Length: 515
Image 1 (cartoon, one colour):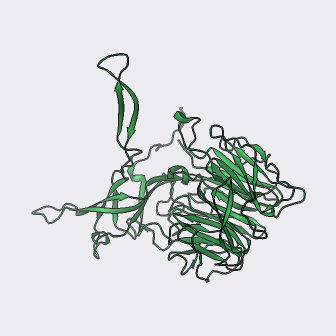
Image 2: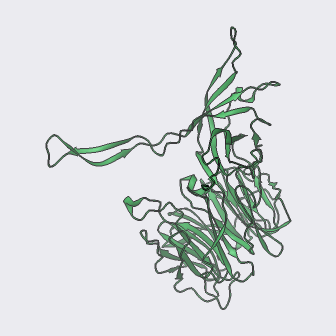
Image 3: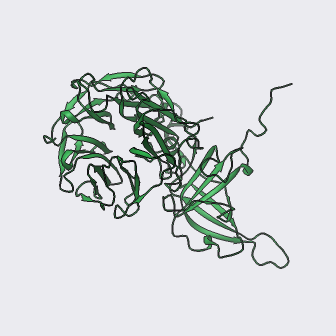
């Protein structure tokens, strides 16, 4: 008898179902299941061009008259992804889709073999996300007949401005277990995205660096950086040249072709060049220029290689326009005098948070700063900016809040399961996919996720985070590849923090299965 094979090994249409989210991805927009609380619908062929037209650049062949030699190619910009939706009208009311569709629509196609399809959190193996669709044309078919009874349908053409991309499950696995001996404070994916025309191939998820040190500093521990250039298979230590024993390091990030580490108790940061072909780190240089005494830096946000923000004690905010030359004071605590612990931003909007309810924002790239509404209290430590109007933040007491009106009002999220005692980090690889690093009593780490722009949240043992989360103390930071391709950004995740014994550190990496 031959080996038994699986009955279905290829995806067919009858194993796909769809959810909609009118208004686009948002914690305030309901997710509806087609055929239950949504009209019956069909998603047509999705066009998602990688690039536009490719045409040759030719010159006269220098060796043969009348022929040409190709010296290059011209690549046009790609079209916006597109697909049409076809609706079957149900009796009982006016179809919503026949109104003028001024606002975007999200569609989530859940694909699976044995999973329960009407469970949006655990009913799929892969999910295709059609993000922020704007309608352009409606076609009403099967209207008043002479003697027929064809179905009456409406086809609507959409351009998916937020892209069309597919996500899978992310199972975290430990890396660098031998190399990591003390707590990991922060970590980052780095490196140029390229194919072999420009050097070793890199999709943005191969090079990873982490910052290691006992939390709070230690007289016996020197902070150091570990980096991997093979997706976490092997690791190399990079001693931070000149860093003092017990100096508290608080953040690591990439600025252009440099790795940067914030050294709080030295009122400085350290810079190392990155070899753009190998990913190796070079000698570290200490930079102190511009920092004010007793207003030491705690965190950094890289808007671009020529604009890097640092937040510090006393509400101080610094900016660097040349990472090798130091910083200048951007705000001397005018919006708050409290210590600012964390900062994040997007598209010119910045949110910095810290002690004693401190939450300040800038909507003009740091030129001016103002407090957000004071309805969120406590120590704030996990900001995440989604858009100029939508922000998230977490508290040291275990609460997550979001705002849809640029901080004028805040709404608390309900996180399932046992009570959470602290929120360490919130990240958003895409507008739909967000992750929250939390801690329960013990401490024991927890990670929450949404694939619906904040509308539905869950922990592990779901389609997105399958299986049981490894037992560890806490995830100080989460990271994902910051690349333009949403398929790469959304299908990789790293968690850096404290091990289960509350002594050593951990580095967990996850990548969706790719066949």
